[in-house]
Image (tube, rainbow, N blue to C red):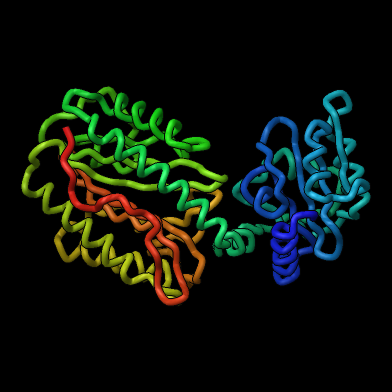
Amino acid sequence: MNDGMHSQRLQRLTEQIVAHGLDGLALVPGPNLLYFSGIHAHLSERPMVLIIPADDDPAIIIPTLEAMKAEAAGIAADRIFAWDDTEGFHGAFQQACAHLELADYLLGVEALHMRVLEMQTLQRFAPGLQIAHAEPALSALRAVKEPAEVAAMEKAIAVAEKALQRIAKRIKIGLTERQIAAMLTQELLASGAESIAFGPIVAAGPNSAIPHATPSDRAIRAGDLLVIDWGVYVDGYPSDITRTFAVGPIDPELQRIYEVVKLANEEARRAIRPGLTGRQIDRVARDVIEDAGYGDYFIHRTGHGLGLEIHEAPDMSPANDRPIVAGNVFTIEPGIYLPGRGGVRIEDNVVATQDGSRTLTTYDRELLTVG
């Protein structure tokens, strides 16, 4: 690879391939391909596969119209197996499988990304090819963020926070969830986002008790809780933030659950340090909510990893016993959801440091009133 950063990442990946007893690893268009090679491509009807042998240089099967990306990434010309729409991709797969001697190979694949199309075509032209799940090795490498990755996420956070601050003053009783989501999307793009990270969640009143609600035509009303979950991509990296607002005066119990969630968020962020597991951080937040009597209404994990993908390793959940390490970036987003009444979620983005953590998000965590 030409780029020094990608060469170093590829070297670390090769070490993992050997450590896991694999003969090689295959990447398809998506975040892993981008991270390890610098090749930006999307899964489409035209298959593309980067094959990284344990003991040789990378090779790629790639549509001709994308071949310049492989050249720019520093892949040798004799290891670029290009194909066009006229001839189809089978010949390129056959040539690559023969050249790389993939027969009886143990090939690691991206279980969350590789399709049946690529897998079966490789197996067709490489008799005896065996497939292994390589996601743990890939996610462990990507989970430790380089300073430039953290800086990109901080830019994405700044853009997202600025946009919500601008539209918050324009939120009025009578606007629908869908209208507020449209206002926010427009402001995000105008504020410097490359793209929105996901369709914003805007959920008011009873809908705010649905963690992944889709914006509807329900108009916000006095007394509602209003949950807004939003983010953008900048320099290829995302932000993912949630804040909950009051639409005018709210019921005392809704005020109470807000304060409980805020405390759970604070305690979990304060507890973060290398060596603790995702399960332990989740337990800190969950204990606060359970002690307040709302444990049955916290119905998701405390957080998820953040990087090239919105959801990646490591997650802060009861199922994660892997220790946190410096450079991990993840969300802390406890919530309480009272069916038919309303819900609260407060989500921040944090990076683990050598002796603790640093919260990247800065948006006010006090209960702000809109409308």
